[in-house]
Length: 359
Image 1 (cartoon, one colour):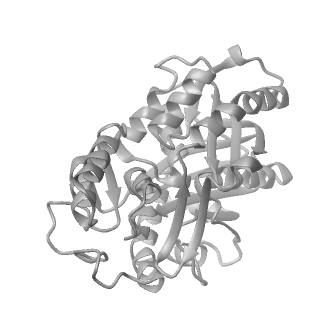
Image 2: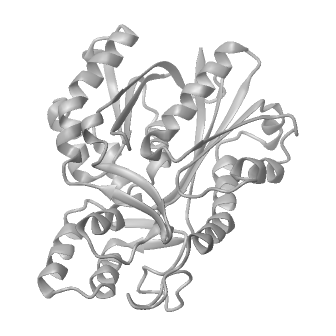
């Protein structure tokens, strides 16, 4: 058996009120009053009240811009500038999340494998070596990086950690996910860019996976299952451009997930040899309000079943790969018991799931 032990999280330095961000978006672009009205409606219906960012630029409370120009005609920041900021802000967030997931610093000396997860910042040496050095982990620690997979990436990290632990009972795996999505704001007006700017936020989450439970609300990892809906490969995408990373996020994603989520649940239940009635907890990745509502309806879930997902969306937004760990952390804090179904979605269109059990 392998277990997700205590989950630790960390937020980016600047808290943003969604109303302030909507004001920023409506005034940044050279758009009509009707388009401004549409943006306002989208933000009002987002289900998000606050988010966190690595930069203060979106917030009315701050006058000094750190990255973004003051208007659309000013020279826009390069990928290089964005990556400089990523590696200035992301490592301290990783360290804070890790600090919040370990029982004491001595526990870190028993780490055998270290996995970093991110789709919003890349370099070599990368996060793995930077954080490893700052944590003073043994220099023979096995390192793996999961990059550019989007919101479902932490499921791959958990799959690898589960395999490492089952391969050797002495293995102990540290996972940290950090995403600074707000660094990749684009100055081209489109509803896709508006949707991405509306949803995405910055955050970090960490956990230790091992063959023994060291936390009273540890999560036993039981089964993983994934599917790819290739007919949605153009509806969610993430590409590197000269002006940052470009997110494609179409309005058809909820419909695509609706068509696949039933088969996805059936697949993992068969893998785990369980009935749906055996699932007491539902950790749905809050990719957006409509996505959670669609899954709730399709799987016939109650408001209580999806309350944790909506709460994380409301207070943190969509932090890409780190988000589902925020949902699971809330469940840990609530001292949940029983089986948990977790799912996340990303480019591909990829659907990832796991079934675990709160012990």
